[in-house]
Each structure stands twice: as C-alpha cells, then as structure tokens.
Length: 401
Image 1 (cartoon, rainbow, N blue to C red):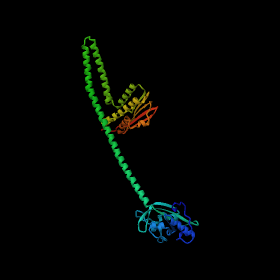
Image 2: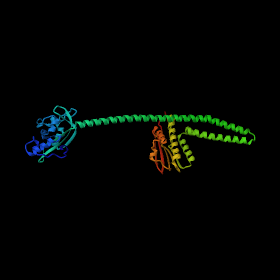
Image 3: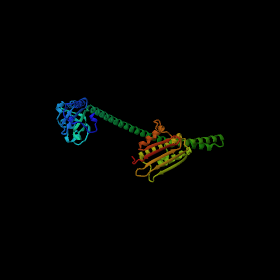
Image 4: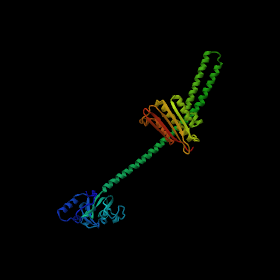
C-alpha cells in the first residue's frame, strides 16, 4: 500500500488534478478507489488535488467538498488535547516542503462533524520531472486499535498493581514469619537457659550430695569388701552422671558464651569438634583489635544466632560430609562497621545444589533464617566428590537496646 512507501512518490502531473479522461487515469482512479485505506493528494499550497472515497467517508465529507481545500485546516488543525496545531509543524506538509516523509500513529484527525479519531497517516513527496509537486497522504482510522491498546495497557497496569499489592502482602507475611521465627528462637534459647540453670542448681547439687554420702558410707564400712566395691561402683556411676549432666547443660547453654564471650565460645566449640571427630584440620581465629562481642539483649540474641549456626555447620560436617579434613576460619574485621566472617570447608562427599536448595533441608533453612534476621547471609557451595564450603557473613549490631 502507499502507506508503506519509503521513497518519494513519482506520479504524472495528471494525478494532481481531479481525475481527467484517459485509460491511464481511469486505471489510477480505480486503484485509488479499490483500497480500503484513505488516500488523498495535496499540492504545494496544501490544497487537496485528489481524494478517494474511503478517505472522504472516513472524514465525513463528499469528495467534491474536499477538492481544493487546505487539508491541514480541514482535518489536522488541532491536537487531541485541544491545542492549536500550527501548519508549519504539520508532518504531512513537511513531506513536500522539507522533503521529510513521515509515518505517524500518535495523532488525531478531525471529521466534518467536529469529532476526532485516532489516525495513522503517512505522507510522501510527489515528484514529477525531478520537481516536488506536492504529497500523497494515506490515512487509516485506528480508533479500535488504540482502544484495544488502551484496554491492554489498563489491564497491564491493573495486573502490575495487583502483583505489587500481592508482593507487598507476601513481603509483609514473610517479615512477620521471620519475626515469629526469631521470637520463637529467642523463647527457645531462654527456655534452654532456664532448664540448664535448673539442672545445674537442682540435679547438680543432688548428685554432689549423693556423691558425698556415698563417700561417707565407704569410709565407715570397715573391711567388708562387697560393700566397699558397691560404694566405689556407685561413686563411679555418680561421676558419669555428673559428666553427662555437664554435657547436657553445655548443649543447652554453653557457660563459656556467658562468661568469656562469643569469640572464645566459637573457638572452644571448634576445638571440641576437632577433638571429637579427630579430623585433620586447620583452625584460624582472627579478631580485629578492639572489637568486642556485641552487648545487651540484642547483642546476646545475635551471639546466640551465630553460635547456633556454627554448631549446625560443624554438625553437618560430622553427620553428612564423610570428610577427612576440615578447615575452620573465623575473621572479624575492624570498626567502624565490623563484620563477622565464618567459614567451614571440608573435603567430603560434597552436596549438590539441589540438595542444598531442597525445601526439606530444614537445617540449612534454619541457618539462613537465623542469619537473615540479623542482616547476615549464609552461602553453601558444594561439589559432589569435592567437599562443601559454608560461609556466614554477619554484621555486628551497632546499637544495644
């Protein structure tokens, strides 16, 4: 169609006037009338030289009402928002005045009854004998297309709003779940601390008293060998009970965490793990001078989170890695915004990405949630057959509540 031309239109001068007689003109007139697009021509003054029926009907005129009229003043005089459209800015006229073919689909044209419609139009110079004689213009009513585009855009905007609202709701729900998880962890740690204290105070004192009574009996049983042996056996059982009780208390709430702080507690936990598993190992602990474990209730919660994550890291190595060597590194950089970096690397069987991201990997999920609550990040990288690396990055709390 003429609207798809990218070069100036070269038509005989006869095309610039109402259809004259002759076989060629009749064929041209038939071509113009057979297309569904509106087509009209304008001379160098912007007056209509020819118009097909489709264009006249689209504009609400009879063809004889359009011939000789200035087309900009007739159909293109005003913007869609009511602003005057100067003729000097008209892309249709610029096609022959400045040699600038155009294709526009963002404007409106005006009908005879004063109504406007969204139009796509193209304008190309008409050249005869190397001289520009005017322009040929093709117009298409795209009201329905614009309406469909508007409806699609509105639906898209509504969908974006709904997605944004749902995302906001999910983000809030996730935040609430994390707060609840952190609260439950705090409650659990407090309960562990209470139980550890009661076990230490009640059962510990009872076992000590029982041990003293057994020793008292053993000293007063003259030389009755069976009774002496029984007292010795009872004393040994009490000693084992005391050792087991101490281990249970430590698992519930390591006293070193309260008495010597997090850095010492992490190093102690690493040493305990190494001695228990008897793995080949390297242990590096480097804390920047002057950086103390965070204090206050928030600092205590932060320290507990780091300690429990570290315990889970070591537990995963012991239970799943089947490793022969483990490398443990603790590094805390300096002020003004110190960050804890903790890494546990083994040479075991390695974990696949699918296993690490499995939603049923509750240990991994728990570590990530603990870290995320305090603005930290836990990363796990495993290669089957080559081991696993667990890295924890945790910024230290800046303020105590």
